[in-house]
Amino acid sequence: MSKFNVPDAGLDVELSDEGGHPVIQLHGLTSSRRRDRLLGLDLGRGLSGTRLLRYDARGHGLSSGRAVATDYSWQVLADDLLRLLDHFFPGEKVHGVGPSMGTGTLLHAAVLDPQRFSSLTLMVPATAWATRAAKAEEYRGAADAIDAQGVAAFLATTALATPPPATVGVPETVPDVPDAVLPALFRGAALSDLPTREQIAGITVPTTVLAWIGDPAHPVSTASTLVELLVNATLEVAHTPEDVARWPGILSHDVQKARLAAG
Image 1 (spheres, rainbow, N blue to C red):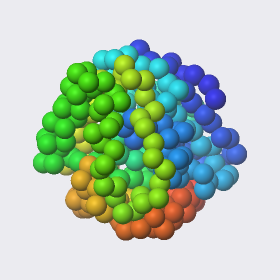
Image 2 (cartoon, one colour):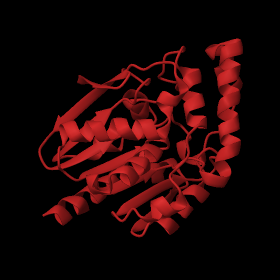
Image 3 (cartoon, rainbow, N blue to C red):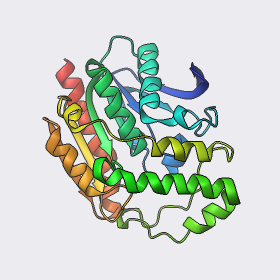
Image 4 (cartoon, rainbow, N blue to C red):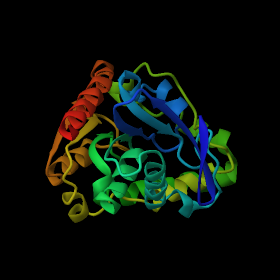
């Protein structure tokens, strides 16, 4: 593990270098490499023969960050991602994979620099466009509640939420984020949305979109719309934990295709 400095933050980075095609793995809001592993979302655990770069986004996990909401917009996170790619895989096309906030970050990065990606595996994309406004209001309310009552009281109000069917049996976890930064993360998420439909339609690399049912924060409608907009995309929808358990194999297949296409 090492630290990589970006403006106003230090990213904790881990490179597993077995040669082969470069892959970068992201995580979701309030999560981290460690927490995604517990949640069964570390799809890179099934990879071999790649150069796999995992990192904690600014303010998450072992990475540092300020309590400034604008630092956590998906556009800023996309800039962090591109800086990492320029450093670790200069001039190479990289396969990107990540859930939710990670998907938003990857799509913004692909819009900013279309030549940086060979292909994408987008997991449980979050609310977007028409469905984003209500979720943004929820995030602002969560930040206000934490400011007023503290993190423990806020987490107690979310403990009884019904999990998606595909995540039944996953261990209970809490945000892997410093308490002082958590409100800023939520406010940064409230400032964020996916790129416009027109921008996404310009992304031409092969893409797999992985979704699951029964999750209002990550509706299948977003995943379906992405597949309609992207010119080279397929959709897989999980209904059970067994379906999610197949996702590492899907990532491995996606990376293998990218390697063969690169020659």
